[in-house]
Image 1 (tube, rainbow, N blue to C red):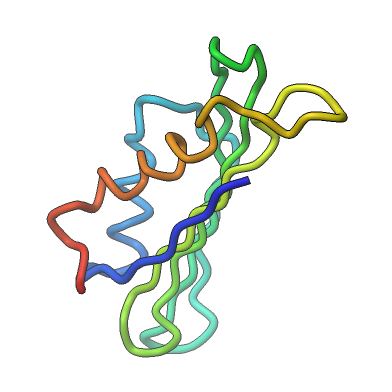
Image 2 (image 1 turned 180 degrees about the vertical axis):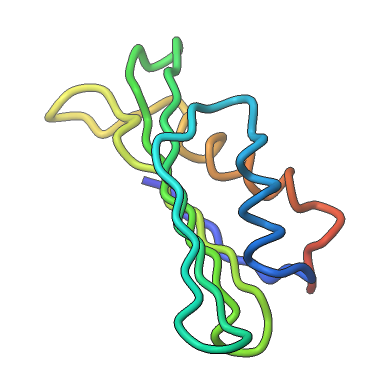
Length: 109
C-alpha cells in the first residue's frame, strides 16, 4: 500500500474532471457530492495492471474542500504479489505518484 496527501489550488470538481482523463489507469467509479454550499467531495476509484508484479492495483482518490482548501488523498493497494511476501516492485508508489503528476502545476506547499 502507498498513499500521498497534498493541497491544490483548484476545486474538487475541477480536480475530478482532470483525473477522469488519467490515461494510465481505468476509471472504475467516480462520484461528486455537494453536502453544503461551497463544499464538495469527489471520490474516484481506478484500476491498473502492472506487468512487473503481474497483478492489478486499485487506487482510491478522495478530494475535498471541507477545510477551506482542496485536499487530495490517493491510496493504492492490491499491487503486491502473494500472501506471504508483500512486495510490489514499486507499483503502488508509481500509481499514487501519477495523481501528483496530474496536479503538478496546482500543488500548494
